[in-house]
Amino acid sequence: MKIMKGTILWSAAMFVGVGAHAADLPVKAKAIEYVKICSLYGAGFYYIPGTDTCIKLGGYLRADTMLATNTDFDAASSGLAGAQNRLSNYYTTRARQDLQIDTRTATEYGVVRTFAELVYTWTSGTYTGAGTTGVNGATTYTSSTGSQVAGGSLGVYYAFIQYSGFTFGKAESQFRTPWAEYPANILELPGSGGWDPVNQVTYTADFGQGVTASFSAQDQVQNYTTNIWNVSGATVSGLATGAYGANDIGGSRAPDLVARVRVDQAWGLFQASFAAHDNHAAYYGASEPTGHPDDKWGWAGQLALSIKNLPTGAGDTINLTGVYTNGASRYNFQDFMTTTYAMYGGTSVSGAYQSLGLAGVSDSVFVTGAGQQLTTTYGFNGGYTHNWDPYWNTSVFGAWAAVRYNGTAKGYICGAFVANLALSSGVGGCNPDFNYAVVGTKTSWTPVKNLTFTGELAYMMLDQKYASGSTVTLPLQSGLAKPAAVYELKDQNSLVLLLRAQRNF
Image (cartoon, rainbow, N blue to C red; front, side):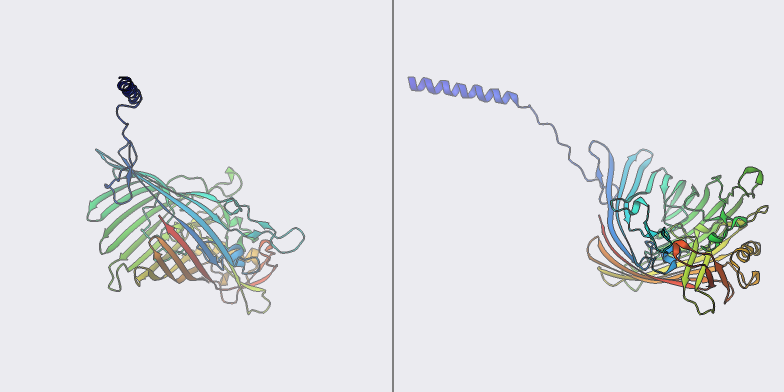
């Protein structure tokens, strides 16, 4: 009996204990919210937990090395790079992390989309300055935070909202093509509207079958203005770098107005673009009573063609672009390119220290008391890409662009040259027109998906139009270590090599 009684009491105690612990547990576990795949907008989208908004994250990390230039993606065409001496960089490096954030929400009135692309970039700088002891050497490392040892720069490439056919914010210009200045290359080329996104308000009508039309008002301040030169303010130091006057740009008055028609189908793409650009100068002198020239509207037109599914191989493409501008030069010489050129080289002219290629791009020029003279440019670029197999591809590319000043503008600029730089051939041998050309090739290897190694070689040519044998007399260019001397005006060139490693995700 004692044994049985003990067993019953022990069992009762166990039951009470188990019941007490069971009472402490929740009746039902709270549901866990898992991240779900969103298949509405293609691969890579997921629902943000607790919402009906889909998000996709992407980007890349890249490392670049440019040989024989001080600038990433560009030729040695100005400043220390153009000096071609011991102050010029033999190489320039860059590392960049890119992050893309794409969100989309379906509504009864259509999809609401936001997109942002942010980059953090570090670029090796250079040493500048003429020294403090009379030695013509560079003494100071660049002050740019983007090049400091533990520094870097934050960039906002894209930041826009799209809804019901409208785009608000920083997005690609409706003037540009999908490849912009990169038909088959990485190096900067003229001959098309630039890649750089721009603030805008745009409406795009979709007619189906890949046919769209867009109408846009976009910011012109940073991306789409070159120079408005008051030649009456030209200086010796400015002319020696290709700046043909004092920059005299007023505040913003009107956005650039852009229209585009595009046909994008399986065979390829055709596009026609047009832009109107207001040239708004400031004052002739240092104060309001000096007066100012009237505004003058410029314009740019562009035609582009892309051909896919070529018989040479799967994925092979040809991209072609042609552009003409009058008073809107940035639609040809896009905003990653310099607008003043000073390239030094050798000479065979007796009495000349070296040769020099001088050139400058503007939207307009004027002199005090006169109106603006618009600058004309035209050009093209193109590229062909061939895929050898899924791992290797090679491209060839080229570009040619011209800058032309009218007779009145040439008179202004040449008068400044003769007066300030003692142009040997006088006004009769002076012609500030020039051509700019690039040819090159690129080969890429993708050993595994989304990891690519690239090598690109490009040859740039500056074809200046001053009379053969013309010379100018320059003062000391202390920042470049160039002495006060006579220089022959002559065509110049630059050969650069780009090496890149990039991982996309």
